[in-house]
Length: 332
Ligand SMILES: [Zn+2]
Image 1 (tube, protein in one colour):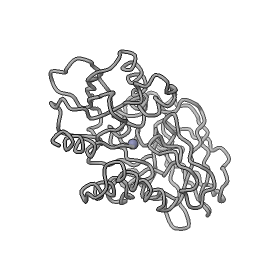
Image 2 (spheres, protein in one colour):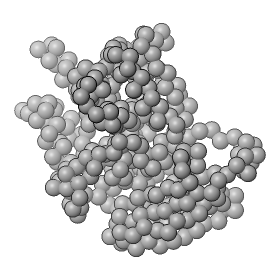
Image 3 (cartoon, protein in one colour):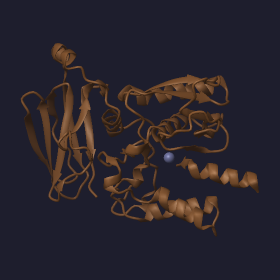
Image 4 (tube, protein in one colour):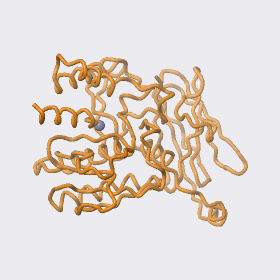
């Protein structure tokens, strides 16, 4: 009974399975997070290290991995037993020896590599404070999937228990705009679940699983964990700026106006209007950053509660692998 209860508590603190970031769960930007492998084969460790570092390419966070017990405590502790799930973001239990992340799928020899990578990226997203994309305040597809997820959670953890019922509702309900840093809702986010179209209002197609960070995941990471910008270096390296082409796809039922800043110093902005379901022509951006905002007939698409960027999403070019980027836009 005691062990059962412990097991239940452990499940409740895990987050079984854009981006939506819970600001209280964000680690301080620039943190070096110690990741302790509590067990597991060396080749599992290598896969986790190589895959998790994808997140740190786009934001100011780094991971120090070790299989030995770290003397100064650990931020993320990985077990390969049980299930896949992660405690959300920052916590104070640095000296504990209990896992904060479980990656059982990584230990399954027959599971294809791309699924393992998807799970590692998704769980590390939770470890950085990112929530499930279907909890996004602007989730555009109605309540059926959220209700289904809640019921599935209750069935898994046990019915006839008010605590479980409440917990399953809490971890699945739509997040409030004031409680999160929200970036544009994104079907392709690694933090989304694959969802059959049967559960989705106004959408005839399934949401397919993603196997890599989406463009908007990278934007969310770069804005949530910003690199320090040294202005003297920025000025000197201005000649290194490359030009990129940005396109936007309107997945809404009404027109969207896009404003793109393409010269930060002169505050020049470029405006275009995209009809519903259409993709814009490429907009050339000559800047160290891609900065844009979107306005619908209902007003700005609210996607980032910090006001310092004046409603613009700002994406450092350092995060772009190519000279073109397509940004999908969805409406509530
Ligand atoms: Zn999850």
